[in-house]
Amino acid sequence: MMGKLRKDWVVAVLFLAPSLIGFSIFYLIPFGMGFIYSFQDSTVDGSFVGFDNYEALLASSSFRRAASNTFLFTSVSVPIMIVLSLLLAQLLNKRLFLRNWLQTAFVLPLVVPVASIVMIWQILFDWNGTLNVWLQHFNLARIDWMKSEWSIGVLAIVYTWKNIGYNIILFLAGLQSIPKDYYETADIEGASSFHKWLHITLVYLTPTMVFVFLISIINSFKVFRETYLIAGDYPHDRIYMLQHYMNNMFLSLDVQKLTAAAVLMVGCILVFVMIMLAVERRFRDSME
Image (cartoon, rainbow, N blue to C red; front, side, top):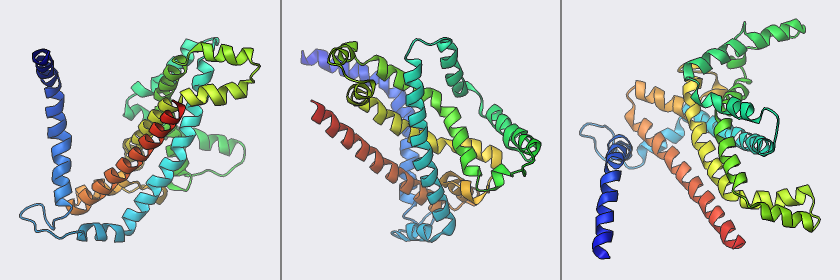
């Protein structure tokens, strides 16, 4: 038995080795080096300076602006997208006319190239774009959408449109895994639709919801590509994100602030993930 387990372990390592090597070379080792650089005054023959880089980073007004904008965008857009994707998943879980076509329409943005997305949103939100033409038609003033306070709302719409299809797929898988016997028993006992949704659907969908929440937060940091292509290196202050800050630090070769910002961002994400997993684990234990 021990020989068979050892053989299976060797086979598993051989299958995982290419992915582990690639992950180590392109992600783990660079992040480890960046973590070390964040405590040095130079990347070449640098000396240890403690938390000086982090103190300078926290004293930077541009970093505080980027961090607050990123927190605001994530805390607002992620819950909105989760609510919308859950409602649409429950709608698509029923027998609807053109359900397959609707599923395809929601998933289609996932495979659309970023350049095409940027072109579509530029056509809609440009100064001479479609929305401003409609506003002018109703005798309303034009809005420079990407250079005003409305820019973060535009960014939230782009993020939701791009990622809602993936969340719908995950929620549909979770909804279809709930045994139908629970709903039949609730119908026999005379439970209302809201009671069934609250005590059956929402309860057994909690693990899926936690996973969707984590994936949505990770995807919220990937919206930088669209923002960068639409608004450039230095967009309006409302949509100046952490990724903009780190990108500009990279262009100016300020590696110390770049790595310190990356370490802080990863640390915050890890803390949040651990809190979510702990909450989900406690909820699952209470259900058992």
